[in-house]
Amino acid sequence: MVKSVAAPQAKGKSAEDKIFGANNRAVALAETLGADKVINGTVGSILDEDGNLVMLHVVEEAFKALTPKEIVAYAPIQGYPDYLDAVIDQCFGESRPEGYIRACATSGGSGVLHHVIHNYSEWGDDILTSDWHWGAYGSMCNDNGRHLREFELIGSDGKFNFASFKEHVEDMVAKQYNTVIIMNSPANNPTGFALSSDDWDTVLAFLKDVVAGKDKNIILVPDVAYLDYSGEKKECRKFFKKFGNLPDNILVVVAYTCSKGFTMYGQRMGAMICVTANEDIANEFVAINQYTSRATWSNSNSAAMKAMANICKDPAKVAELDAERAKYFALIKERADIFMKEAQECGLKYLPYLSGFFITIPMEGSQAVCDLLEKENIFLVPLGKGVRLAVCSVSKAKITGLAAKIKSAVEAT
Ligand code: PLP
Image 1 (cartoon, rainbow, N blue to C red):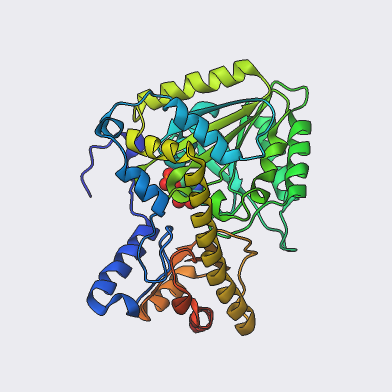
Image 2: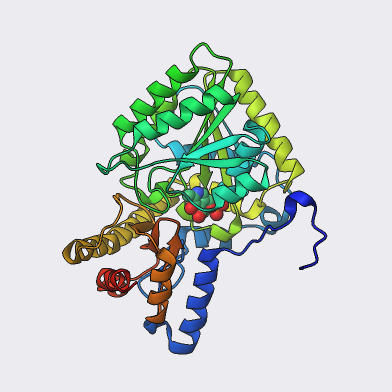
């Protein structure tokens, strides 16, 4: 038996991550064979057409311009005020909802999710998300003694499955004081799916109804990690307006991150942003989440906050940022369009993709298909019910022909 001294609740945990595992193998193979011989569709970061990690130019310049003090100082636990203002502005743009809006700096979008789970659900509670979701949600729940519960995101008609969502929420509200719902839209990881404006209306009307007159709360967490590559800047933010004027027992906490929109992945910088019609709830939001930051990682990364805030103070830099993002949004779309066109031509089914870093090919036996593809130097991520392709990181040249190769691998297994 393997010796262990871990506390009972920590025994058996393992950080082995299928995504990083496949990526490591792809990188190692590219070093021996040459990068042009390997297709690495595992990475959730934007790579350019030559396979280099993209750092937005305006962000690079902002980091270079930082003063030593901006880099090394301890920042306030809640975050620098100019960063918090910038985050709210960057997130909502022209679609700032009505109500009390407060932000707290976090360690990326992951930090938001950690704090929401930790502070707004109880030990043993279920947390709701869609069946197609980022794998880390499950670990975050388990590590906090919670359980991740899944509704079916996409119905057989290819649309948002409201019936499944409703069924789960009703059951959770009946059983729990708080119902935390993580909704990764737009640009869902791993599908690229998004709720439409009408879907959001239906969801919010139902949520109001399900807790009306009850001493029960809904904590709705729109995870907008890929927002900046999900469409035209104003258009893709319109749904935020709907979060204004909700009843007090519905708290919206937006999971915002600089990881993708500012290509600051490793800088670990994000923010949780609350929207509520009640000032007490907004004050409590800052108090409890600041406390949890102090009790986990303490203050956030000063350099990253200052680089972001300094860009946002300068309209010319914001214009440059928007132009760069639009360029990469268009590039990702071109890659996705190539893949989807070829998939249709060869009869390979994929889930409804609207925008974002990933496309998913639904299937059973995804591990065997990925194993087979690895023999052809193609690295993708096996999920429980499909295979994930990172269109953010595979060049147009390498995406061309990929659908047919995946189709052959599916048929051969
Ligand atoms: N949410 C989703 C769906 C993601 O895919 C990611 C990153 O991959 C995040 C949130 C947040 O990531 P980070 O903690 O790096 O900001």
